[in-house]
Image (cartoon, rainbow, N blue to C red; front, side, top):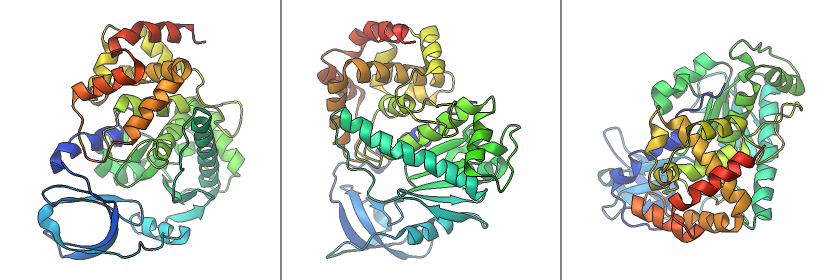
Length: 384
């Protein structure tokens, strides 16, 4: 069951950049900002990530949420001499729980705060999966020659007990796509949200089971590959946007962000852990790529993100993103790492045009996208 057709990387990146008209970037700096709109005024202590020339602001709150404030709503600003202390795990959990329906609990691990209203065992299994991904993610890029800082705070994961409650709650983020997406990463809230997959599509979700049993129930199902892949895929997005690989709301091409997430997602169905490796052959993506590849596919992905947003071409775009990323990481690793450094330096809410995207790609890899299509096809054909 691979339900990922639309993600908030697509939803949130379609229209936000030009909406602010953000031409200049300032900061980041910590400030006390008084905001007033149609509702009553409020004062917030936050980090000013970017400032538009017209006075609009991109703010990051202590609970990791990003907020875009239009110029007319900025009533007063007061710089802080020192940044406030970061939220403790308990304080972070309390902030998240205030935004969720009643009945949620939380658990804290070394690097995550998991808020859930399903069984604690299932939440523990997911947390353990994400902890393994965290270590593997940092280690993978270090060995590739890219030192990442790693997340500066614990990352937030929200797990609903069942699909229905999940769909009702996240429809504001995903709209109609909430019915098709079993988990997603939201660029604005910085959270991964999903639901208890052992209770979906005929799987029996029973409270009180052991954490290992929760994992086995997923892996024993016919949908196991897609379910685990989705969890790892979305958690990879969260890691990428919190470790320095990508900048939140920067102009990161979707073929890169999705390609990296797909490259990491291949599950391990022989272990109750569900996942252990990076870069295994993604067979469903490979089959789709070989069946649909056509001339000019890479040029289209590099120039713009439209193919990912069109339901008729989204699956082909995902397959192409995986093929390009697999080739570049396995055959042009140093070039790809240098290209990622270029993308990581991009500021949030500064838009790129298609020609610049192609120029940056060509400079990084020494060839225009069309010149690499044959090499990628040969590489993917040889993968077994």
